[in-house]
Length: 433
Image (cartoon, rainbow, N blue to C red; front, side, top):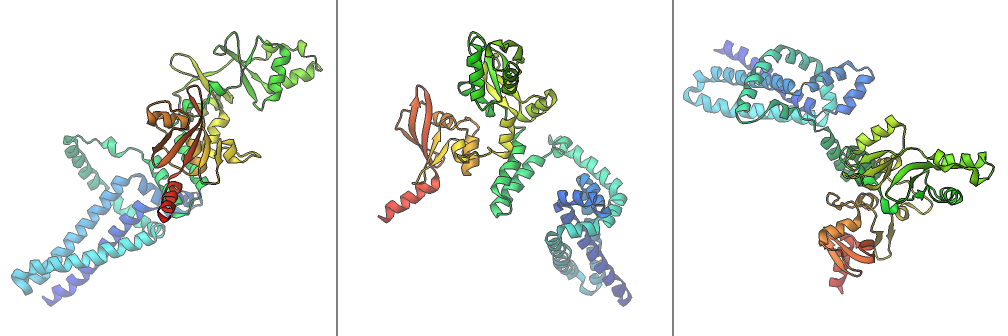
């Protein structure tokens, strides 16, 4: 019996160490930084390359580690029972259960997993080679087990493809938001990253310049009028219409006009405007910005006209409008607030143009107004109010207070917005008085 004790106790210790290895490896490899591992692999790290290969087949990796961990834990408990059953008799099961639970919990679960969390990348690189061997040996068994598991889950309506869905965008978005709250990611960097992620969710209709705000010229107007209009604008391209503004027949490039003026030595009547007009390119309002950006690249174009399902002109969109969604509006000499139609007031409120998009407002002021039901701030107020408000009316939505400052016909042109923190401060001051 003493010989059995001398042999069995070291074996249990080795099994507990193996259990700690499996538990720590699982935690490290599932929480490892994928970006850092890929960079290390590019730098020539063989261990990082192994980690990346293991993580690519996550189900197989976790299955092999769980199988190994379960096996050594059961074997260790069985050996402990065989040693103590003759000494403790009918109390052996209870004592072994309590003893092994404590040993496994402390030394084979909590300790290695805590270490793996504290030094995730380092532990992952250290265990990668050994884990690859374990996965190679236990892979066939794990594959068989997974096959029967998915057959059972299939009876409940679950499909294997459901587990293969990609959540990369949501994971990146959540990580960036968390890091911003922790102060490790600047607001500008957060907005830029989320702007890239939003390209597949936003459409041309979300970022277009509405037709009411489009600068256009008529091909039927005099050459001198058209030339002066184009040379006085800051737009590089201007839509051209015939007979009625909705009938867009082409696009004029300011650069072509300048070349024509120089070539004619100032003789404007000699310029053939029709020859300078290029064919228009129409895109549907539902076209995703990610797809539209690719189309801009393929067509070598920077400019498109947006139409609805009936072919009616809704507005225009440029490549710069898409880039603004990623990098934000580049400020001019008036500053970013003025350019976005946002004017801060001394009392902490903001005067905002009604046509200013909710995304621009959220980005400029770090607010979180919803933009699912409306694109502009005026549209949000009309949507929530369920009516077209009159000047002077006030509303409270989402913790903000909105006051209508100006209205032109049925269009809200200016609002005063008080953010939640300013409203709370006013309430505190009122209570103090």
